[in-house]
Image (cartoon, rainbow, N blue to C red; front, side, top):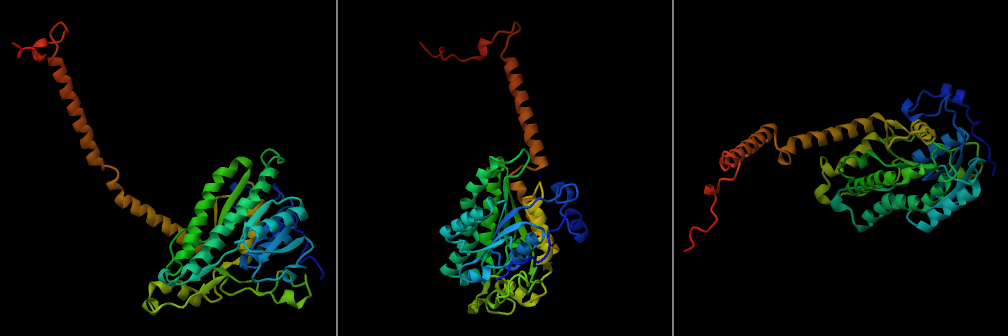
Length: 384
C-alpha cells in the first residue's frame, strides 16, 4: 500500500497563522520563539476518536508516530499504510506482553520515545447493581491496569533517555486520557468513574516519583467529544478497502447495558448516562480535531500542567464539583476545628488557670524568697 503524506510538516510561522488555539504562555508552548522540534509519539488507542485525530495532527506537524490499534477490533493490515512516518501496531493493553512488544518495536523503529499517550478506554453504561463481575473487571483491566501496564513497561526506556538529556530538557512525558468522570460521579457510570478516579490518583502520585528524571505527566480530561472526522485518518494514505473500512463507533468504546426492572423507568437516576448519550447523538460539544491540536501542543510545551480540561462542559462540571466539595468542607469543619468563640474561651480559660497557679506559687514563698514550710505537709506530724 502506498504511504503518502496527508500534509507537509508545518513550520512554526505557518503553524501560528494556521491555528487560533494555543496553550497559555506559562507552559511555553510551540511558537516562533519556541519552535517545535520533531518528536516521537507512541499512541495507544490510535483508532479511537481522539487517538486517530491526535495521530493525524502529530503527523501533520512533522512528528513520527507509532499508532497502536486494538487487538480484538483491528487487524494488522488496517494499521498499515497510514503514513511514511507512522508505524502501525496492535496491542491489548490488558496483556503486558503485547504492551511491551509495542514499546520495543517503537524504540527499534525510531530509536527513542518522546511522548507516550494512552487514549484507550472501555465503559459500561448501567446501574452499579446491574453490572456483573465481568463488566467490572473489563473496565478496571482496560482503564486502570492498562494504564499501569503502559507506565511500568515504558518507564525504563524514558529513564534511560534521561541520562542523555540536556539541562532543562524533558526526558519524556505521559499524556493519559482520563475523563470528567475522574472528577465527579455520574449516575449510570459508577464503575467507569471508579476506574478514572483510580487512574487520576495513580498519575498524580507517580508524577512526584518521576519528576527527578525529567519525566512529566498530564491527565487530559475531555468533555463529551464529537466525532468530527468520520472518514479515515488519511484518505490518500491507503487504497485498500480493508483500511478504508475502519470506522469509528458513534459512542466510542461504551457498552449500553439493558437496565433491570427496578432501574428501567423514564426518570431513573441510573439511566442518566444512557439518556445523555441518546440526547446528544452526534451533537457532542467538544471537537476531537481541536482537542487533538491542544494535546499536540501539550506534547511540545516545556511546562505541561498536571491536568488539561477540554471543552466548556469539562471546565464547568469539574469546577462546580470542586466548589461543592469546598462548600461541604466549610459547612462541617466545625466538627474538626473549634470555632472562633470556642477558641477564644479556651484561650481565656487557660490564661486564668495560669494566673491562679502563679498566685498560689507566690503565696507559698516567704519574704526572703524561701519556701514556706508551714504550707507543706511532710507527713511527719502524724508519727508518734
